[in-house]
Length: 251
Ligand code: SAH
Ligand code: CA
Image 1 (cartoon, rainbow, N blue to C red):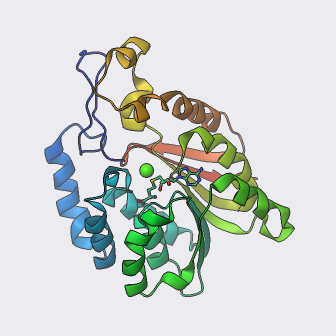
Image 2 (tube, rainbow, N blue to C red; image 1 turned 180 degrees about the vertical axis):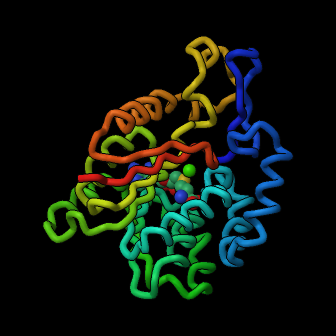
């Protein structure tokens, strides 16, 4: 999500949702998009972004600058086999499919097939549908199923988690088995519109943030604590998009 305000508990400004990610100004955000992101955004991704813009939940799609960053990570590690949790209309799954080699495979899980179908014709036209195994389901039972097969363990190069925040810690435990040593797990929305840093009173005094955002702050804060304390990973948290945490499995 890119809708965060930078809020602030110190200035007592009421947080609102604005389309500039976590950056201080809309102008700076536009500058980054127009200088470094849009000119390099592959045409099919632009098409999915535009097809998603009118969706009532369009704002939850992966941001183009977040997507560009993810594409770089995928290339750096020469990813071939990935997992995606939370597909929506397909921006991040398409960017992954465009980066993966011809024989690459993405296991993409989301219970909302209808949203995926918005992006599917564009994915087909881009000629990369064969790399995507879309599973129309909640993710947790699928990950548990995958773990039943010993061949799945440690077989994935990369995982992108962009779904229900209350389950991120559950996903982490499973992905730490499915992703290989040296592989990456990327969590999206880990700064949650900046709300992770709000004081209790600032959170309870604001009615400008949707209930959906407010109700999940504690889950994101707990995830951040758990990841920071996990010695099995090398990690970093960056204010790209709505906050992205990148974890490399060390053992
Ligand atoms: N990565 C997407 C955005 C994902 S939005 C993009 O680039 O556009 C979050 C998605 O998580 C929604 O599509 C929602 O249906 C999905 N989701 C919610 N709960 C889920 C669960 N338990 N398992 C898998 N997906 C889930
Ligand atoms: Ca997201």
